[in-house]
Length: 108
Image 1 (cartoon, rainbow, N blue to C red):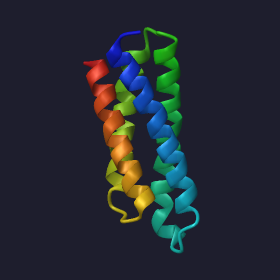
Image 2 (image 1 turned 60 degrees about the horizontal axis):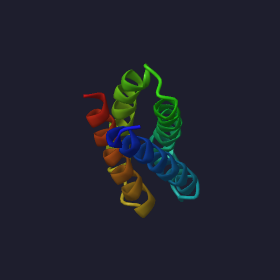
Image 3 (image 1 turned 90 degrees about the vertical axis):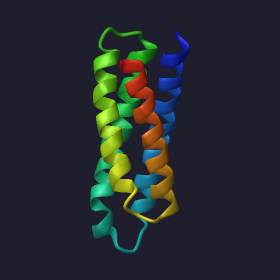
Image 4 (image 1 turned 180 degrees about the vertical axis):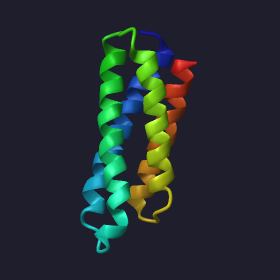
């Protein structure tokens, strides 16, 4: 596996973990209604990141196409999380940005 694929795989797993943490932390916030969109995107982003990582690890021919979609979902999640000032949201937004960049680089 080349280094771009390896970096993307690692970014996907790190992003999935950050999204899982963010969603769980959002559920403990006082104004949960305000966090609804964040939680939903966290769950979707974590799922597609894990799937993209699996396809990369399996050296699937579909990995590139999936990584393009993963980058889009990561960007949406980063945009949503970035609107919230909670540390977990800001950390998640950064992980999503890194993953989106790694996925775009791999898919280029």
